[in-house]
Structures are given as structure tokens and as C-alpha cells.
Image: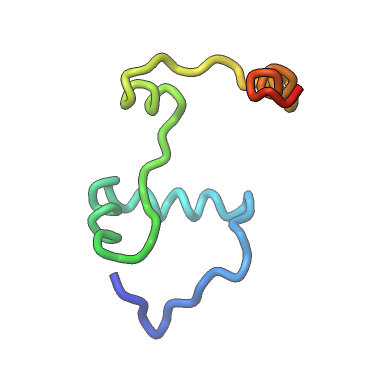
Length: 83
């Protein structure tokens, strides 16, 4: 895939109203086709897995709930000898 003269980079992030159009574009190719289109390019492209898909891929159980902000700080500080 190479940049063409008509290609213009996005000047803003995608907004919620953009999602249907983006979904329609992504639906025009299979994941393998999209990966092939970007193969060899200097871009970071890959599938986004759900937690369950990632866990199955890694052979681990899906994670439980995420810790609340700061919930583990005291324990980590103690383990590191910083408490």
C-alpha cells in the first residue's frame, strides 16, 4: 500500500458519528485481506481482541475485574521496600 496523491491524513480523531462509515469500510475486506494490505508497510496494524479472545489466544483464563486506581499501591510499595 502506498500513499497516493489523493490521500489526505486525518486531521481529527474519529468521532462517534464516524463509526458507521468506518464499520462499513472495514467490512469490505476480511481480516486477512486487511493484514495483507498493510504487510510490509511502516504502520502498526493488527486485530483488536476482546478479553476472552486474548485469553484464549494466550491459553490463560480471562482476567477478573481491574483494580481500582491506587488499590494496590500500598502493597506494591511494601513489596518494593518503599513503604
